[in-house]
Length: 277
Image (cartoon, rainbow, N blue to C red; front, side, top):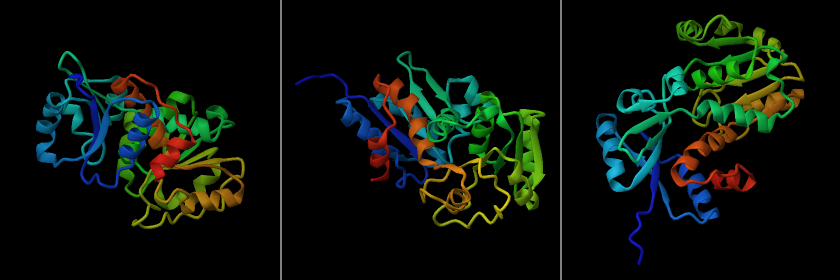
C-alpha cells in the first residue's frame, strides 16, 4: 500500500450543506483520475481561524470560503493577493508547502469568464454596465468590469450609502443612482447585472420594471437557484442575451482546483450537469 498523503480540499461556510462546490470538484477529481477529496466544512465564526490553521496538518492543500467568512480571511491569511485586497474579501485559500496561508479572490475571474463564455459577442467597451446591489459579490463584479474596459458602471442599491462607498473605493467611472430610479437606468445598459439575492429561491422578487431593457443588451444574474430567474426570463423574452449565474460558480472554482490538484479543469456541459445534480 502507498503511504502517499491524499490531497484534501473543501469549502468553508455557515451554512454550507447547500453548496454545489463538492459536487463540482469531486466530478473533476473523478474525471481526471486524481486521488483526492473535496468536502463541505461547516465552521462557526468563532472557530474560523483555529480551523483554517489546523487544516494543513490534516492533509488539506487548500479550501474555498463562502458566506459569511470571506472578509475575515483578510486578517487570518499570512499573504493576500492584490486582487483580494482590491475586493476586500477572499474566497480561495492555498496552503503552501512553506507553511504560509495564501488568500486569493477568484470571483471576478469567474464572473468575467462566465460572461465571455455565455455572451461571446459582448464588447465591454460598447457602453455602460448597470449593476444592482452593493454587497461583497458586487465588488468582484465592479473590479472585473473595470479591468475589462467598461467605460461606466451605473450602480444602484436599496441602501444608497453602500453604493456610494463603492463609488469612493473604485473611482469616477462609478455613477450611483437611487434604487427608485432603477427602472429608468436599465435602458442605458449594454450590460445589466444583478448581484443581489433578490429573485433567489426563498427570497423576495427583484421588483424592477424592465420595459426599458434594450434587445441588444446582455443580462446576467449571479443567482443560480433558480437557474433562470425572473430577470433572465423577462430579458430573454425581450430579446436580450442572457447568462445564468451557475457559470460564475464553475469558473471561479477553476484556479483553486488547478493550484490544489495540479490540473486545470474544463468547464463544460458535464461540469454543469454535475453541479446541478
